[in-house]
Image 1 (cartoon, rainbow over the protein chains, first blue to last red):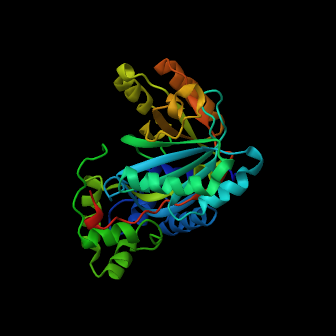
Image 2: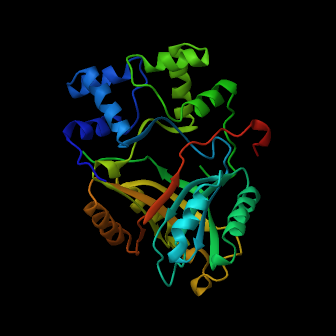
Length: 161
Length: 178
């Protein structure tokens, strides 16, 4: 459900993609930069939040810095015919932060279900991955966990101006 | 930041800010003042704490998280298999693309992938990044450009379906840290 973005939406993305100004009246500061009123900036951001063009406004923590030193991307080979059922159940586990159906890339990559699991140690993550394995049982033909060992880049979205 | 590197020390107020501010930042004239009041501090102190945590890379950003797919664009996860001897060059090449929103080095961490193809666990993919572009066509253009610049194949993993996304993580209590 894509809604074409108009010019002000796009200019708001460009003005805030590096972050919100850390000043007492941040929306007024942005309005000044864009040459529109602060009311218009605030009304537009509220609309973007409402329709999901902004997921949320707030702090994005570095996982490592707040204690999640083990970050595992678990990947699973489950039957395509039942993947929506398994995806919903795995996604509902309280320790899974992202869960997606993605295409296999045969022969290199037989996995079609991706679930991110974060923890304070690899053992903790592997124990949680074991819970997913238990849930999927014999419906899962193979699985793996890919741990992140380095954040190479984490800037988020950047529209090129 | 590498795995195992010592985490910065966060006090109770830092933790309250990180836990309480991963969403819901108000849209009003003095949003920092409004949030500061709920934390029992003043506006200036909250702004200073946020700045300090950004400088220390406890926070990677503070602001709106855009879902570009709701604005006509695309996010796509992609992977590459990069030989160790070529690692530094490829990191620099890939990260130079503004379409690369984040990029992680990953390694297989378990022995349960015995059924994976060719016996190479994780398919040998050791670099995983997310491309964000303003139009769906931009993804293919970026993939081609990264392949040309790096000389290595790029494997896109576009999502077929999203079952769950939770972007908030509570700060783990210091006693369980490392």
